[in-house]
Length: 301
Image 1 (cartoon, helix red, strand yellow):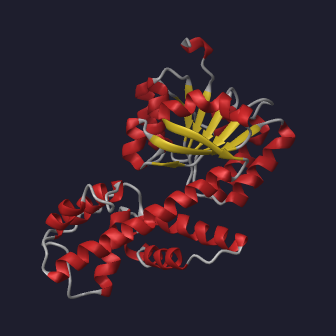
Image 2 (tube, one colour):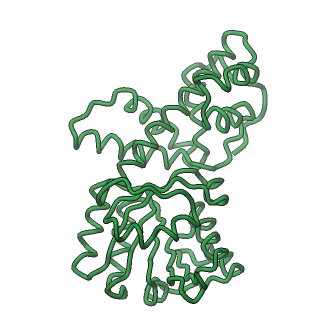
Image 3 (cartoon, helix red, strand yellow):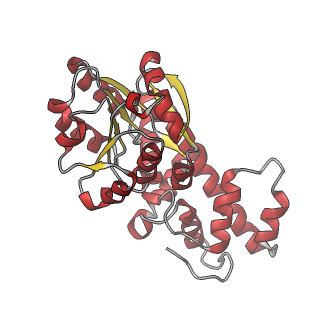
């Protein structure tokens, strides 16, 4: 497809994830207008050929597809409400933020009377995945809208339609449930090795390739060994996602005792380490076990 036939994209929310996602779309030739509440954060995209809009209205007015990548559901709802007067009928809005299922449904209902289609499409893979274009993209919405968006999604990663509106958010919560729980378990394993006299790095190497192997053990296990808590996927994001998981569980009448404990662990880190990488779950466990510390390196934030 030539550049002339590519849809005009407005990308709203140029943060830790939004910046590399928008950059990949620009590198793929998509005409893109970027808007962020703090305009300076969007300016690096100008070097890739983006139009950095002064106002939200300027960003979305000519867009065929609007992508939002924002902090949380309430922010998404406020921003979508603000852009409504400037959206053309036939526009497709894709929210790639992590929100509650109910919030995704609210946005769809807000847009429908204006003949604006909607997909909820949260992602997993962190900044590394966003930069590499390997994000897992979990999509809720109508099949026709998914097919329309699929070429755009494929620039950023691997999209899967998982069900109707709101299903993308449920799939993302399932992902975060597994990720957060596994991060906590890897931290516990590291501390057990340390306390029991085994070399934690050697223990990690020994179990890799067996049933305990995972990307969490590979990446976050190494981060813990290095005490590298510089932000990738942040504690505040995991805490928010786990609050949404528990809300979804309550809505469906489920008891999730392990996830409840993991949610408490991440919440306990918000005051001091909200901006840190989720590997900082190790710090919460060390606080519970003050006589044990993984390695002798300095913490890096």
